[in-house]
Image (cartoon, rainbow, N blue to C red; front, side, top):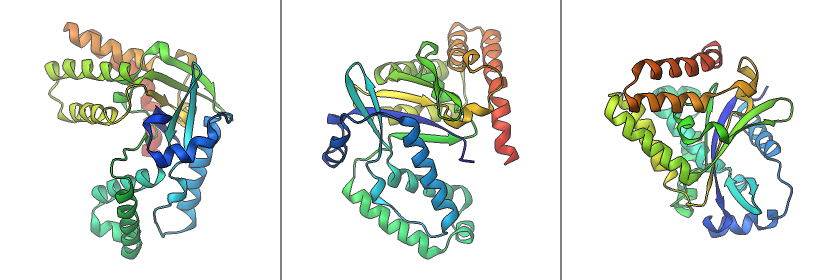
Length: 272
């Protein structure tokens, strides 16, 4: 079974991408759009690499694999950015387990090869920022700040139904800025404020005509009840509105509804 991950993607106009990316994607301008097939291909590639070898490296062949979004007669592209995402995941793992423990998982020479490969790739793409963020066994609460309930849709993800939200990046930026102002006044939680600042910095890297997509993907299979009844974005925004008004009881009630829905999904991470 493929990993249950959720995704936050940014789709940019082709003109906002680098020259190499534009040339690589030019032949897809009129091709059929199948985000589900792109996601399955990405996950299958990752899974095959995971079970086939302990040797790691940077694969430049997948640099310009991309998700495509067509809206109002225009096309937007979200490069999979596999080399960059792979390296960021590795460095995050090293930070969490430490260099000594990492050497128990992977040979030092393998890490050195990946390090050398990534540095070469980075020199060729100095301004690159990953267009895709992902997490397993849930959806981060901060992601819901970027979207609104009326931007949600249930879609066919192949073997199951899932949920995605699509918002203009200008709207997503306005929402996260407003949320930061509220949280700065009422909450001392440095972790939450750091997450919000990180999201803001990430969004600022992209073109102002872009779209943001929050995709539950396979995680939706673990949500209890009818997907049509999911109001996660609405609950987060109602909690923020209540905090702005100083109504702590209403804020707590909305957040408890949100947390209760996702507690079941998060439990799978502990079980695994």
